[in-house]
Structures are given as C-alpha cells and as structure tokens.
Image (cartoon, rainbow, N blue to C red; front, top):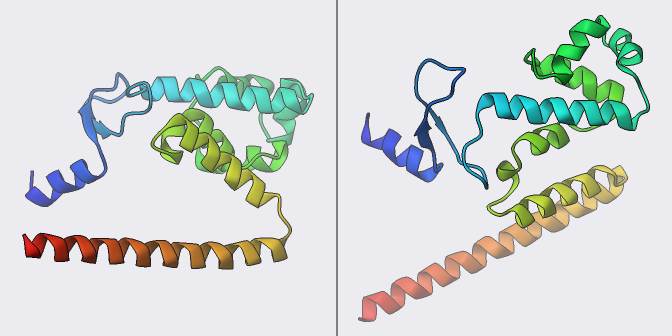
Length: 169
C-alpha cells in the first residue's frame, strides 16, 4: 500500500477487520466498545426505527402503506433482515419526523465524538440547533464562525510560541 494510504488510515484511526457480511478485509474506525459488525449496526438501526414508529403510536400495518410497502416488507427493516437504502431512510424521516443524524447516531455514536459524553453533547447540540428559528440559527452560525476563527488564531499563536521556544534550546 502506498505511504500516503498508510498515513490516511492512521489519521482516520482505521483498523483492518473482517466482517461476516463481506468476503474481504475492510477498514473501520472502532467505536467505544470496539468494532461492531455491519449486522450489529443493522440491528441498532432496526431498533431505532421500531422505537420511532412506536413513539408515534403507529403499528406496522399503519406505517407500511405510508411508505408504499406491505407490512411484511416493512417488518424486514425492523427485524434487520433487509438493508435500508438511503432513499428509504429519508422517506422514514419524512413519515416519522426524525432527523437522519438521529438514526445514524443510534447506530454509530462514535462518529459524533471521541468519548460517549462528547458524542451525547454533540448530538444534543445538533438537535437543539435544528429546533431553533431560522434567524436564530443564522445568528448562532455567525457566532460559531467567530469562535472557530478565534480558536484557530489561538492555536496558531500557541504553535508559533512553541516553535520559538524550541529554537532557543
């Protein structure tokens, strides 16, 4: 493998692993409790959509026609028997009123932060922002951009100071 790919895998914290559903090794980023198989991720997604349906007090028989599916076909998603296409996920979001990030978070929270606490905070922040009126979101975005610029400037100044101190040694 080229050097740059090794650097990329290291930077992204990817680990080579075997998944029962794939006949070749794949590279994955471990979660908080190791690397979940794709089947385990499918199970988490299935649990999420089942709970989302139940939270809306809908039965499978009531939800399936809204999706243009038979109850049996929809049930395969809730049992993690069938894999969901992104277009179906978007349709479920429209019908059940959740954001795609919520389903993805339920399956892979490690994508939202280095620790479970950071991931929860990131998800909660995103959910709070989504619920704000547009004008408030615009103001918040301007504020966050200023904060990021200040943070980057402070990081740059700290790095410059460190390089200066190392040069004197």
